[in-house]
Length: 166
Image (cartoon, rainbow, N blue to C red):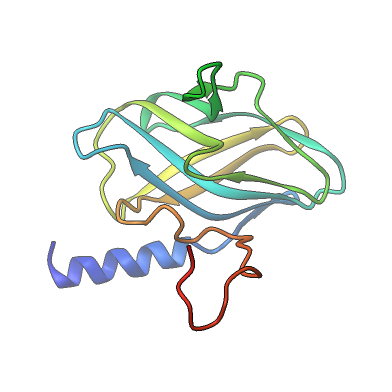
């Protein structure tokens, strides 16, 4: 990738990483990834805040980037093995609360990608809420993001200055 293309992709991703608002629902820090370069599946992650004044429920998600789009999470089975599962009933979004859609937890799953997810491109994802209705989010593809990059609510209280954290 040329320097000019890399800079353009970074500027575009930063511009679209700003929070999206719709009817009291705010989507913050969205990004999408493919599970590998040759994968036919991928996922989108984001923080969804509820400022509507009432409880709501994320019912489903859709996108033209894949043949099927589902809401997923990871759950531990009886043998202590983490498994990714489709959450058909969706996710509760409490009044003044949020849904943290992060790697290793809740996320939007793209199954049967129609094309490869390319660094810097935008993916349109429509989130459907029980009360707020449809919220469309432009999600930048960020294949280089590290697992904890962009995560909120980190507890730094146990870190000691001048010493590496564990």
